Image 1 (cartoon, protein in one colour):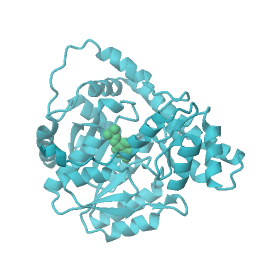
Image 2: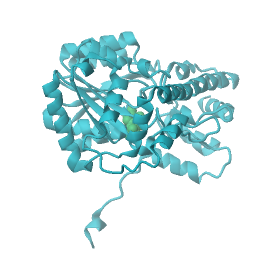
Image 3: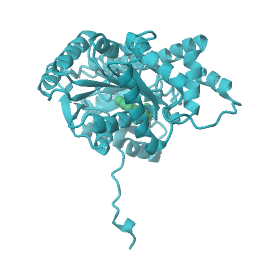
Image 4: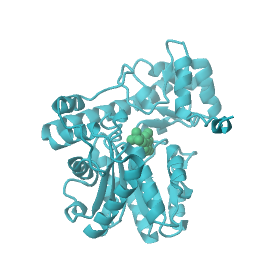
Length: 399
Ligand code: PLP
């Protein structure tokens, strides 16, 4: 026997498991609501026109050298402007350390490794529930985690009181992982008023906020509005970190393009922190990929292309929002006496329907409709052609 005969099969990723079952289903009317990637009204993946134009402009470039460890300078500058606001004082004062990252996942992992090294003894507080990979990322970085209350099943909304209590009870100096907008999987975001209260409570306890912003522009359709949580915390004087991803809002999923930034007290600290982020990146992947960063930079540096992209990201957000209304309406038309208001109250790519694991299993077995067992629907998979059938099936399993 070799070493490898002792190796056990790793557990399947839950989302990939759903895709496999979906692909194996031969029913022509099958629906996949598991995948967290945008689809148009015909169920097709989309390449944005702004991205196509950026590709034309980048094509034929002879530059295929390595990027620096920290990534493309112009890309980073544009990214932090998008996150913090064009002329935010923290940018003018040079307080921001930032590196290009391997999309949102890579940003989170880079921060988690930084936390392990430079914020010793601190735990990370993660919302219950959250994007499942958050747990894996901090576990593999060797940082202990706790959960904070976030979602209230009775109202299918925010557990604001529970969240505030958990902030107060966490040891001072804890890291709180917050979803800047479009919380995954619940679609439940705090109101601006609630964000202000959360910010004040966290400042009082001396906690450190890390914003995972995987959906800027994708929630409301407006990039500034989706970043308002971050701007509220900055106004309160927080030091904080932001993980950005261009996977969803530019449709650059496979290009792995993102940015991790850390707001520090001053320029000296920012420079030191940035140098340490690079020291973590270097033995892990040496330097980030070039192509996606060039595309993003072309779009964000050109006023016309940027406007074109703003429109396109709003178009995606608007389609999702209209599918929420349509699904709710169709459930009512199908005769469901239950309240489906939460579907239109929630925001972002997902609806947290409240359906149980058993209901989800029945949807797959009897109706050829696939989603995660926590009852989360990816609205990207819903369109004008399948929404009535989906609503009827949801009504049938929730009767
Ligand atoms: N964070 C959250 C909350 C997400 O939902 C996702 C993607 O689904 C990510 C991070 C990471 O995405 P990516 O690594 O593709 O940018």
